[in-house]
Amino acid sequence: MGESLSIMRIIWGFTFRAARALLPLFCLGGAHAEWLSVPSAQPPDANPLKGFMPYRGSYDFPHSMEYQYFAFDDLMPSLDTPDFDTTIEPFLEEVSGRGNHAVFRIYLDYPDERYAVPQWLRDAGVTATSYSSHGGGLSPDYDHPALLAACESLISLLGARYDGDPRIGFLQVGLLGHWGEWHTYPNGHLFAATETQNRILSAFDNAFNSTSLLVSQDLMSHDPMANIDDHDIGFHDDAFTEGTLGPADWNFYPRLVDYGFDKRWRSMPVGGEILPGLQNIVWDDPSGAPQDYSACVNVTHASWLLNQAPFDSNWGVAKRVRAIEGGRRLGYDIRVVETRIGALDGDLRVGVRFENTGVAPFYYPWAIEVGVFGQDRELLISEETDWDVRTILPDGGPIEFTATVPFSTDWTDSFASAVRIVSPLANGKPFLFSNRNREEDWVILAEISQSLGSELEVWSVE
Image (cartoon, rainbow, N blue to C red):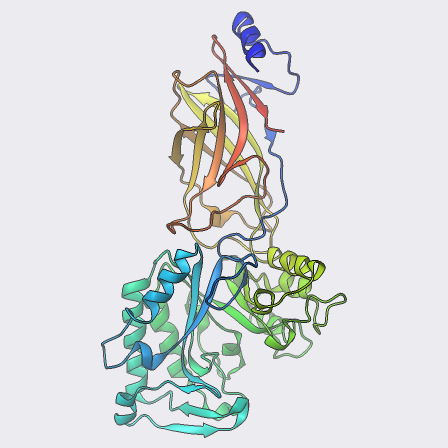
């Protein structure tokens, strides 16, 4: 490189490297500002806010999120006085300490385990009906004014404290039904009235404007259905690969199509859980799942799935590899396709084309930065752009952005342009593009040299 630069200094930008494109210092969009390819790579095994998710704990299977249920009576020991400091807060601190995002759901009725209506609400007249299905339990009177008011109060307090908290990946709209899954199957008469459902949806949507929400697809099983159209809330399917594709009209995807929600994934996330009884066999060869996993992912555009078995099991290499690939199939898969570098009014101009070859967008407006690295890969400068990663859709083709970086003649003769997406979670696992030539979470776009004249020499990173 030193010899090439010496020659370049003498002949003012003439290059012997046919692969390099010589760019005038005053122009990005001119005839000489060629688009250069950026080498791609296999998607990372784990990326933020996508993939398989275990329950709270430390595991060696690739993941970026952890899950937890919370009982209503633990969170609301008395009216309007929540206890988040000994419940949710330790969970968030533990999970974020491992570099992961948290996902959780609140329940009032957990079959065969716990009835979570606090005593102060029972004293206020909230009654319950016993049932024998799913191991048995108690189903509260969801429509009781005192219980509904307490739920709305908890949701409001939860939003005031945690909306936009970078430690939270997604929040499930629970509370109603067994496990907070918005059904009391097979005892439909025990479920909440439509008015109650609408008030719970409204309370969550009003309380959370930044944190993404999901509600069980069983919301669509009730007639009349709650008015989900009015709310920015996605869906989760807790019987993935068993009741996802059809042909029954109560399966997840047929419901999405019937109600016109099959494009909702473009702006609101889809998640869920592989049916627990299938988690150990879906990765067998051939798969033991009744429905094709990849087909389920493709039509639902799911970003993440609760799937505990790979985290607990000591599988052989081949089965583990198939499970890791299954996790990579979920959600976004964003790579840099091309770049072009030039300058305008003395500043460096960086153009980037991104492509999403996954099944879903990235749903949060994390900052995208453009930077410049020196010869020894020290970061010389980074600038936050106004680029919106949420607009890089999997069915939209390449999307192009351009940004300006202040240019310094004090930089070394050779440097490199780069781009990254910045996680707002301190110690969070980095967002990684599906590209080679990375410096931590940065992707090196192109190598650049200055000449003594008014030209930049730019070439692809192989």
